[in-house]
Structure formats: structure tokens, C-alpha cells
Image (cartoon, rainbow, N blue to C red):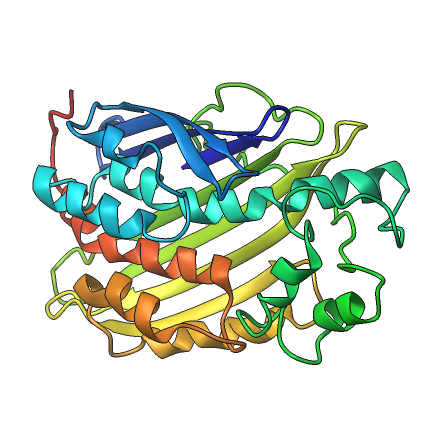
Length: 323
């Protein structure tokens, strides 16, 4: 799954997702796919101005006029329940809109860093993360990176702004010996654009007794003026799930590249999934994974695991009609 973020004129999100089954014998099979384009008025409360989705969802226009953050997932869940979309690629894709909208706010700040201006005292505030000091301080304690006493809030209170830097170059996610491991992007990321890429590989138990194994990762990246893709956030995740009860037996997250010094402290929160049932993950994470011991973006990765049961069941299917 990928969501591209373009803030050239407002915010435009363009997402694509694909579920691929690789059988023991025969050719890999695409069993589900989805795409969407969403225009968001970032300056006015992240208001959704338009949305086009494939496959089409009856009633999707109910999202237009709403914010892409507060209350969005509740309304999307209502649509998903009504149209039986839970476990489908289109639901995973649309469920990640709040996370993509949030991380897109890094682009204006990174544009300044990329141009060598930094964040100068008295300079006009950029849109997005760091746009207004009052908004930034309201984020205090929301996650490990924004914890009280951390480098972010200290920098804001001292008047030097958010201490964000352009991250390390992003290695390719393509595998030379597995050309279909990722779907082909619709287009390259433009300069100053961003992309959220997510992968969930599910290996079901051959005999139904061994644990289901999940290998997952996500990356948020930003492309510099020179065209270099750099990493903003990247985590990998290994999970084992009891094949019979559907409960999490093991959950270990590894931070690869993160923007602030305290961010890696959130990795341990993934272990709190142990003992939780898959079906309850979205509710549990929304209610319990809050505060300075967690990471908003890692939470998005963890909540996506709620569909692992459906993915494991599909792995044995010979074909699925998703047209």
C-alpha cells in the first residue's frame, strides 16, 4: 500500500493498495486492489473537499466536508460495516488517511530545512507541523517524540522551533529477485512530495497448528529539491499469532529511522499487543495506545494488523472476484 502526498496546492492524497497471494505452486495472484484520490483543504481543519475511490463505495461522499482527522475513522468504520469492507484493501487504504494527512505536515518544515533556511525566529510560519506555536504546544505528550522535556517541545518553548532535519537517504524497497513484491507506483514522488509505504506479509500455518507469522514495515519518506528520497519514519515489525484463537503471541517493533531523539522510546509499546485478539486491535489501540510511551505512526502500523486474519484466510484461496 502506498499513499502519495502532494502539498503543491492544498493537500492531495493519492493511494494504491494490492493484496497478492503467492501459492506454493503456480503464479502469484492479485486477490484485491484499491485506489483513491482525495483533495484536502489543509489550512481549514484538514477539510475533505473531494474523494474518488475504486472500487466505488456507495455513500463515500459522506466524508466530503468532514475533517480528515477527528471523527474520520468513526464515519469510515460505519461505511465499512455497512458494505462489509473490513479486511478489504480499500478499507486499509482509506483507514490510513488520518496518518497520511498528519505526516504530510512535515513537508513544509522539511522544505525550509532542504533550502537551508532552518526555522528563523520571526519568519512566517509554514503550513502543517509547526505552523502555529499554539497548535504545536497542544500536541505536548501526544507521543514519545512530543513528550514533555523532549527535544521538540524544548525547542518550541525556547523559540527555535521544531528541530526537524532532512533524514537519511531511503534505500529502495524493491527486491531484485522478486519484481512483484511491491506494486508499481503511479508516478515518482516529486520534489517536496511525500509517500507513506506499508507492507504486511502474512505466512499462515501450513497445518493450522503453528503460529501465523507476520513480517511488516512502513516508511514515510520525503523527496528533496535535488530529487533524493529521504526517510522521515521507518519501522519494521515481527508478529506471531495463534492460529486457533487469533490472539497475538509475539509483537516486536524495530525503529529504523525516526525524526526526533525520543521517538525510538515508543518501540516497546508494540509488545503490549501480546495477548490481544486480532479482531479487537483497532478498538484497543484507539483507546489504550495513547501518550508519551507510544507513537502515532507506529499505532497506525499496529492497527493495520486487525486484517491479518482475513489475509491469512485468503492465502489459501485459488481466486477471489474483486471487480
